[in-house]
Each structure stands twice: as C-alpha cells, then as structure tokens.
Length: 263
Ligand SMILES: C[S@@+](CC[C@H](N)C(=O)[O-])C[C@H]1O[C@@H](n2cnc3c(N)ncnc32)[C@H](O)[C@@H]1O
Image (cartoon, rainbow, N blue to C red; front, top):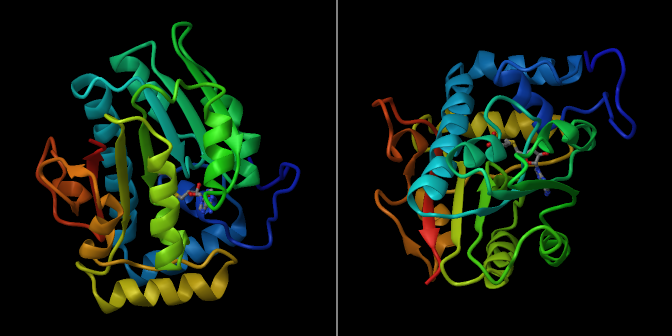
C-alpha cells in the first residue's frame, strides 16, 4: 500500500487532492493524512462520497458519448487523477480501439502510477505528461507528440478547474488550450458548486483550504458555463453531473458539467 512505501517526490505530510479523491472512490492509493481530511469532510457532508462517484460515472458517460456518438478519436485528459476502474483510455478504446489519449496531471503519485494508464490497445496509444494546467503551451506541445492536432480532439478538464482559483487565469487557460485545437474539437468538464448544499459546501472549501497546499474555489453554474464561451454547448447544457444524459435518474450533486463543440 502507498502507506508503507511512498514513491519518490511524494509528500505524505500534506493532504493531496488526487489521493483524497482516490480515498473517496474506494481506492488504496492514499495516506493517513489524506484519510484524516477525507473523513473530516465526509463527517461534515456525507454526500461528498456520492458526488465523487457520480462525477466519475459522468466522466465515463461523457467519454463514451464523445467516442461512440460524436466520433472523437483523440483526447487530452488534464487532471487525470490516480488510475481507477474505467480510465478515459479504457472507455474510449472500448468504443473505438484506435483512440489516442494524452493524460496530464501534476501529482507525483499519479506519475508513479502512470504505467497503469499506458495500457493501450495495439491500434491506439496513450501517453502521460507530468505537467501543470497552468502551462497550457507545454501541454499542447507534449500532446502533439501523440495526437494529430490538425484533427478534432476532446479536451477533458474533470474536477480540476476549481484548483485555478483566479477566474481570469482559469478562463484564459481554457481559451488558450481550445485555441490550439482544430474546429470540431470538444471541451468537456465538471467543476464544484454550492447549489445543492449551500453553506455546507462552502464550509468544506474552508476546511480544505486550511489543510492543504492546493486551495480551491467553487463556481456558480453561470461561472462554469463561461468556460464554454464561443463554443456550441450540447444538450442538456451545463447541469448537475447526475443530469447529463443519465442512464438512471439520481439526485443533483454539487458538481456541474457539460460538453461544448468548437465550430
Ligand atoms: C478531483 S481530482 C479529479 C480526477 C479525475 N479527473 C476524476 O474526475 O475522477 C483532480 C485532479 O486534478 C489534479 N490537479 C489539480 N490541480 C492541477 C494542476 N494545476 N495541474 C495539473 N493537475 C492538477 C490533481 O492532482 C487530481 O488528480
């Protein structure tokens, strides 16, 4: 278990979002410091565990839709997270084995586990780039080694933009990434809100920001929709992730997302 042998560069004294997310999803790649904050937050708002699972199911539905229905064959998945069941390449390559995926994350433990993300089909390929979302040009340059940027790409930013707390910076990063992609490309994302749980969600942000070194901010659904400025937003729009083309109805969670197409 990660508890006993931390990978190089992994700080086990400060909680990290990739590891807490892994804990909430039932994974084993986390440390006592992550579980302590993860449990503290769950005690304050037990629905967070459902939010984590619902967001992951939404991610899978979106990737399946983009591959099987929209015909996308190339993905840049920034804020990948620790490998779990049904990672982006597994879902995409189930629909279209020739799909190519570039994963990006800035967490050293995700880097240490990246080999689980590099299990491509022979027809497709996967690559892992250890980089920060704040370096969009570097990410695009690295992605061009695996993808044909003259063809449409789906950019997925799932649960990561909330860690870019400055609005202007966050909108500018997404714009710079989308500007580098061909017409017919897609933007797919979800981000945290306080629509459902109000003050309880705000309180969690306070606890998180006091405990770690990667502060986060919640945005309104309108603020999340602004990431899609200039894109055609596909039905059903920017909605709670449980309402985006669900297979089964479920109560709303405090994560809103959607998919937009570059014309
Ligand atoms: C909440 S997790 C989401 C994981 C996965 N996308 C999902 O939806 O299940 C956020 C991920 O974004 C990564 N992350 C946060 N800030 C980042 C940044 N500035 N650059 C790159 N990755 C970042 C974290 O390391 C973590 O793996």
